[in-house]
Length: 127
Image (cartoon, rainbow, N blue to C red; front, side, top):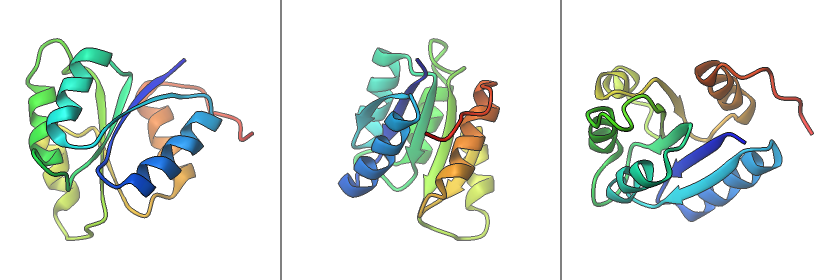
């Protein structure tokens, strides 16, 4: 089963996205700030991380840099997520180490396509 670490401080976003991922067959664990996200990545060794960029304690930019600088977890794919639509945010996320970037509100099928591509998964059938 593909393990997803969802790092998001917004409870409604976490709940909505995690339920949809679970219905598609993913195992989902959570963190609510960047520091917890880095710790959970080290502990859980997920296959992919969905990282909100606007997090408390440690933002998603710094959390991603920490993950990508850690030899044990640097190979984990990270998709940066943000409600901000400022020009340059995608480039900033990629520079921080994100493997891809998406904006909120999440267009779920597009996000699934990015997950499939990054992990080399076959197309997931809609249930």
